[in-house]
Image (cartoon, rainbow, N blue to C red; front, side, top):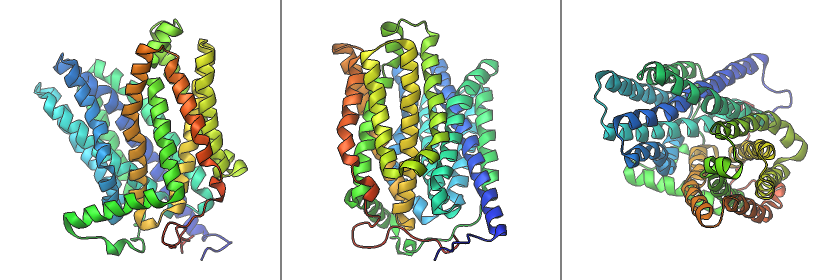
Length: 424
């Protein structure tokens, strides 16, 4: 039962301190991820001149998302801070290993690909566990604001601080960005040790044993996503979002140079505009949801993204393109804040890790298709075609979001999906 008076002051202070630790740890881990994203391809390119091998190293980290449903099941079996701490320590050890390889001058490309894949797996563990732990730290009404803070911390780390820091440190001394990575992950792990222990949710005790049990539990999470009306619709839309976004961004560097006629730094300016839009979206998301509700906010986010794509297709003028990228990124972040909060509200607590990782697999799995589609369209139809495709696809998704605000919070089978926390 949830008491109107709220938690005692001492409990509220502990939650505030724990939430501050969680947000800071997300920021630190994101800085490490961003620096790795910049430095690892640079290292691969310095080791081999084979473009394919460099691309394999870059793709290996994303390939770990194919295991996301299984990782989500493991997160559900060990809720709370431990998966995040383990993921940070694993990434710390991996980056120390890379730094040591660089110092000794022995850097096999195969080893770099394996490090990228293992680091990607640890990232999936961390992100899934971080989203699953939020409902234990805040009240239901605070989910949007809290998720917006976490997402803003991640955007700052991976978009503004990590990549330029990694590239700059690489020019100073090649092992240095990997040392920075290791330090950020270690600091994040130490911060997370201060999070309170999280009790196993009701239903977690039924977890199956062995590999067969792991696969059955993973399938149960995927089945819930497929049968739940809200989750099913959100997965379809997020897959379309991934296709449209990657269709545009895969050819953006060429679009900026050839269609807009900007010099080489124009591409960087467009990326900065998109990152600023993401931060603005994170700051405004909680207020937007409070005014409009989740259902209308989801429709607004998709409509804004579609509008931005179509405007660029019609008017390829670089100041307007930059503004549309700001709007587009703000809309995407609003979508993310809404959908993260909905998953936390509607998912049974003992399945939140699986719901989170399965949902994100739909998003990440669609992105390579979008990138390939954008490249084909740009090559054979013109550089405006990916923008038209992205806008049209999103407009087609708007009917799926009708009535989302009135969607039942109950999953199939009649079991309540909204669980009141006894401590809230």
